[in-house]
Length: 607
Image: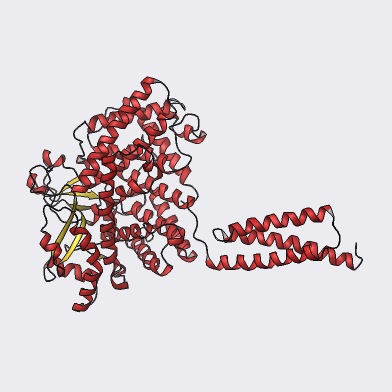
């Protein structure tokens, strides 16, 4: 995974492009399909890596790489590819966005909680936070693509099509960001309520906490409570948030929350934070401020910049809240797998979502010099390793193993409030392996401890093998996902067929792997110290060599000058790349020793 993300991504692009080219001849695979999330996932597989991974851009015909052209050959040559992608995106946006509203429905992900019932037509039009989140990611990718194309395209007709594309993508981005803001909720409850007891049991597993520890938790959560009080919650009493003795949760519910305001967009979601949808929202929102492309002049308008700031505040509050619970008092209750949700449910998915919160928190802390210390990441390393074993990814599954259900058919996240429109329904969640791989790669990029990094990369290798073995091996979708029966041959796994959701999640892991390779590796302080010692000795020997020379020979002068150049480069590398600095310093020391040996031989009369 850490050495082949580009090659693996191009293989996916090749299969994706071939499928797009053949779509017009296959009436069973219409475009758009009527499922906004499914179609968005296909476009994200193409546009998101081009935005995030250097060298994969195809908007500029003059700079597109040969391997990219080969992978996307089914869409045309170097000039036809941008035009083809533009038309595909326009077809998507025309189907799901007009000037005043956007369609975020995704009927393919809905599942009734009672297998004997079917979702109603109204329920199939329900819009969820996952729909809003991927709309943010896709819209940003489309805007970045259109911006790059506009810099090179001169034909008036082409520029007009790109202007139309930007206008539609910007409109959809605004709608999605507004919906995400309206889906953020907080829920307060007394300590002696069922929710309160469940939260306390999750924060202090295995023991009955004394009131002092609960007060310490409330004190640690107080800055988050104050931040929430500054937000507008039409469904929540300010008095309840102002009561410092009340427990609370915050995050995203599954869709627009129920509101008593007549002017608000209709919402059906009960204002109860969901771990799954909170992570889904945060993964989309982070694209608003983690990519240089989003900061390009003119990419976001003033209203979108204001919305982005509002979402960033909510993102910060959510990740801090759940990170405090995961690490409560430094005891790391997250290690007590599985995590207990405030609704009393326990699952490995909940644990994985909590890991995601902590990873978001750590990655927010900054660059290589601000990475968390090793003792903070050690619990995450242990939890990720345990989750891979519990999910029967790194361990063998037995027939009828319940852990297989995490992958196929997946679990169902209830959509509380949707029963107002029909039978109780839920959202299908079956992306355990790619999400686990993504978080493993992110932890590997965060750690300064080489042992932890090696452990995470080894685990990432096993997860990658598992995930890539689940690709379809025949038919028009060959090379895409998902075929879980290939890795669970002894289990009765229902055939999944083509899953754009798993394919898009797999593409995300490649983008994360590429980002980890492109980022600076956290330097080992031991190597930094060794490099400093070597440089100190090399500088001293060079100065002594310059001092003791009695004759000037051009070859020796040239060698000493070269040694000085090598040492200066070594010194520049010492803090960021100490191993390179050590190699350079050793080369300089070797050259100095050869000069010293030659002088000693000359003094003894040895030729």
